[in-house]
Structures are given as structure tokens and as C-alpha cells.
Amino acid sequence: MPIIAETLDRYVKKIDKSWTHDRSNTVGASEVGQCARKIFWLKSEVDAKHRVARDPDFQETWGARIRGTIIEDKFWEPALRDRFGKRLLFAGKEQKTFVSDFLSATPDGMVIDLTEDEQHAIGVKTDCAMFECKSSDPRTNLNEAKPQNTFQTQVQMGIVRENTLYKPTHSVLSYTDASFWSDVKEFVIAFEPALYDTAKQRAMTIMTATSVDETPPEGWIAGGAECRYCPFTIACGVQRRNLPFQDNDVDPQFAAEMKDAALSLRAMEKSRDTLDSDVRALQDQIKSRLREKGVRKIPGVLQWSSVKGRAGFDNKAIQAAAVEAGVDLDTFRTLGEPGDRLVITVG
Image 1 (cartoon, rainbow, N blue to C red):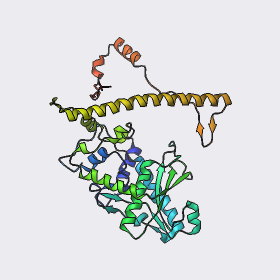
Image 2 (tube, rainbow, N blue to C red):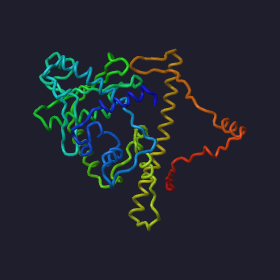
Image 3 (tube, one colour):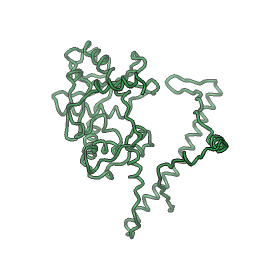
Image 4 (tube, rainbow, N blue to C red):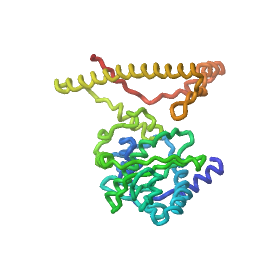
């Protein structure tokens, strides 16, 4: 590793935030909205029965985490402290972890006794509000708050309401651009008790599960974007492909249940194909109208721009060149993870 990179990596281990609360015993506010199966395995890493090995090539990077910590500790919290003084609670050195059953949260801060001007600034009449600090990648499109962050603020508000005399009704969720710290986006989130109850139930389900089968692979179900940052993709893939060893006799009731499910799946697939076609048709219609009017951007509505093609390699040409050079391709041959196939034959 280059010397500066190694130096920074070593230093991070010294300054990284430590937690007095044992995070393996609860689901944190920032975790509860993530894939249930991923969180189940994260919490089970100290459990001999349920733990699974992390992907051998998985590397947990610290860049985004430390970026957020530095912005919060060295800029965001001091700025709020300078403005709100002692009215800023649970922030900086006063930060506190709250626990409710299997759920926990460590808010970034809460401001009490909001003045009329402050209430006007956030657009809400309330004397108490949570404040949450996030840093954002400048490439991220933040037209609205990220759902997992919104869910996190619901947990923070609910757990503070449950554990203290304060009853925050809203949370000011802010995103500071990691490149241009003056670029800050704010979203005011209203407390919804039903979402807090959902989070508590969800945390209990994850922490009391006696088998990984009780936690769905939500990252994979949602399309796999979250899986790119999961340390358990191999174990999850094995679990999803876990076929029965043999075919047992099928009773009529189970056969009817599976037939209904299979027909529902077939109907969804047909509906999806139709919807995909409709989406592409509408996209083409919008582009045609923009082309007719000579317009590429309508502020607050849309933006049409060209995108560079993804760089790649001509694998066939590379293989041909390697063979011609006398390279044994079998030496470099790899086998991907095995898959599975579910074929619907009814309908």
C-alpha cells in the first residue's frame, strides 16, 4: 500500500468513533431500514450457530464514514452549537444512545425552545425538533431525502419521545455536499408514529429470528443495488439457491397454494413486460417533443443529456490474440457462482 494511503488507514483506526453501547444487541436507527437478512448476519457474527463467513473479497472501506464524522464533529455540530448554545441537546460530547427493546438510536442533535424565526425557517410550528447531519456524494441526485435516512429520523424521533420528556414532532435532515460544504440541502420530516412502530417490530423480527429463513433477502428483492455493499452476498446466494434434496409427495392443499402463487407470478411478469414497454414509449414521446422544441432542460422538471459509453474490452479479440501468442486460456478460466432457475409451467 502506498505510504500516504497506509498512513491515513492507520490513523483512521485511532480516530474512528467508538461506541459504549454494544451494537450487536440492538438494531440501530441507521440499520433498521437496510436489508433484513444482511442485518441478521451482521448481528450474528458473534453467534456460533448463525454466523456465516464474509465474502473473501469484501473490503469495508472507511472513506464515507470518516468523511461524515469529520463534517459532523468539526463543522456541523460546532456551527449548531454556536447558534443554539445550550438549547442544542444530545450533540457532540453530549451525544447519547437511546434504547427501546431491540431498537437503538444515537441522534446527531435536538434543539429545544425554538424561536418564532427558527420555526419559520423550518416551516413548522414546534418548540422542539431533531437535527440530523449527513454528508453527500456530489454525484448524488438529492431531489428528495433518501428513504433509509427518512426512516432513521422516524426512529430517532420516536425513541427520544419514548425515553425522555421531549416530544419532537419534526426532524431537520440535512445533507452537506462533500466537495462544496456550502451546498446544503434540507428536508423537514414529520414524525409518524406508525413508522416508528414498524421499526420496532422490524428490529424485534431481526433480533429474535431463529433462522435466516425468517429474514427475506430484501436487497436482492429490490434489485441488488444494496448488495454491492453487503459482505454476505455469497452466503445469501447459497441460501437463495438452497433446493430441497428430494421431491416429497405433494398434498392437494399445498399444490393449490403453489398454483395460485405461480399464476400470480405469471400475471405480474406479463404486467411488468407491458409496463416496461409503456415506459419506453413515453420516454421516446418526451424526447421527440424536446427535440421538436429544441429543448434539453426544463428546470425542476427534466434534463436530457448525452452519456459517454462505458469503457470495455473486446473479449473475443483478446482471446484470439492470446491463443495466437500461445497463451493457455484455461489457466485464467474462472467459474461464476452457480445459479438456480424457477420455471412456471401453468397459465
